Length: 100
Image 1 (cartoon, rainbow, N blue to C red):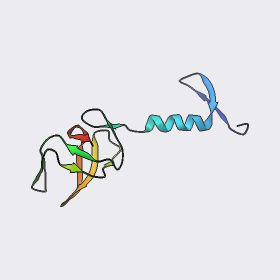
Image 2: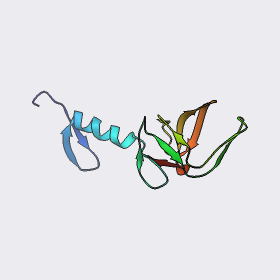
Image 3: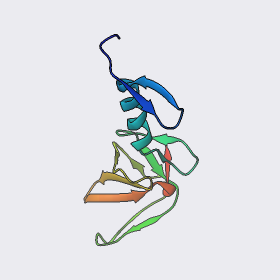
């Protein structure tokens, strides 16, 4: 700990270790994605649809209750990237999903 550089934190007005400041900044930059009922979604989660969704360009409708496996977060708090049989590059809005 003696070798750690200290930096001034503007928010708290205190000198803190640089490693702690980096951790604090990383948490501030991370996006929290929540499903329709407020559960936090993470990469690899399984979700179900809460509404029938018509997929543009695929000519297909995903029915309510459809299970989507292994989602990926996109960096946007409202969009989730996923795969479904026959549909590649499917992006769904988090407001229509519920975590399983």
